[in-house]
Length: 518
Ligand code: ME8
Image (tube, rainbow, N blue to C red; front, side):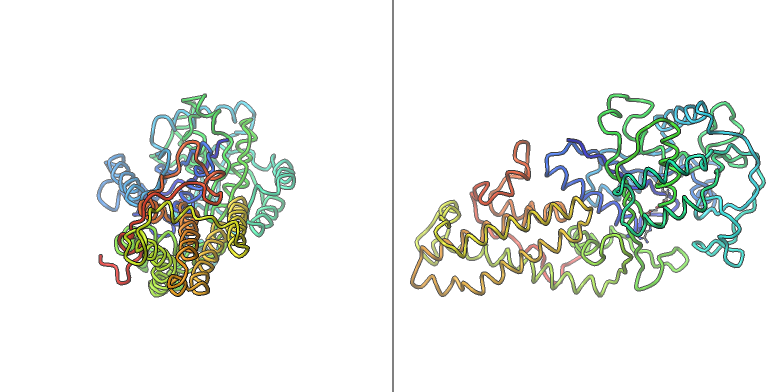
């Protein structure tokens, strides 16, 4: 079983902000989850280098004559950012790499051989912000609606791709594959677009001095989106490693933001159809983040640096917040105030407190300070089958796992997190109801059983949290002497009640201390 997922490849004219981090983090969560299921995961991310935006940014810095140097510097910054945030990508593709160029050439030739590329004159507008040819009817007061800027007027001899030829095939594909475009609202949007507005597109630029030369016509470079989309193939070997490519293609998921859905759900599948390559299983378009209600932008200077947040609150807290705050697929807002509130209520006083309470009680038993000394595994392995109430805990945990897996199947990791938090609240309530400290006075055996159950709940919570908060899960496993998931010990086994022994109990430091220090 393989799982191939991708993020968009980002423009590198600036440093990554929280919006880019959002897509990359959700992809990382999905990659963790599928690895936990035992899948052979390939998680591709990378950067879109042949863009006019990048060139203009280089020129602004006085590096117009050293574009490759600028791209090397920026690309290293993006890679470093994901590394410092612990993103577990399998490969990082740059579109100036030779392997990518080779793949683009091969792809272009196949599409040309198939009769879908022809020469024509493009007369119209081009918005550098969108890196897109746009129609006059899309302008508002003569400006691009997304970038509030007047687009460039172009008259160029270009190569065109016969996109409109694929209208009916695209509509049929989307109809026959209801999961292809998600969420559903985006599917309707894309169907309307394909049905009513699909036109042939220019796929080369005559006036650009940077980019991949058009095969057979070095006076032109390949249009940046045509080149960029092909990264999903070249990143896994297309044009340079057939075996690798066969192992992972077609993609199981392209995760993207909602603004680039037309490229991914109309142009891209048509390109693949033309080249005779099978289509990805799914494109999921998530919503957009605003900052305190405002669009993130360079001119407003309000872009949030994910590395700064992670430095202060930890990577796991940031991952949690981004997932928890926004229904996945919809738009959301980032505010430091709400971040702090959630940190305190859900992390410090929520999961952090639950884990530390249970470990504190168990630790006292192990050390012998409240009863006779006990081995961790003795506490843990106390039977529960004779207790009707506790049997229902076992069932409840299995229900949570079922819901969790089902939400991941639908790519709703935010809902999976809801289910985990319901289990944490249940654990808290269980402690309140059982009042183990009161039981201890008269019945050590009963007390031990309750703590054993709570320890197993902590283990399940940590495993459920693993894709979302890998560092936290690792800390809990270290406290319990539980191994990390590894070969032959994937989810199917680990999610069982008492699947693995707890061999140690060591409370360690608080998982989410209040007032964390930078
Ligand atoms: O479009 N909220 O690159 P890009 C949420 N190079 N997500 C956001 C966001 C926000 N405010 N801002 C950006 C490109 N994103 C092309 C892609 S793929 C073949 C080529 C995320 O640097 C979101 O995933 O503009 C969005 O689709 C992507 O960054 C756009 O990144």
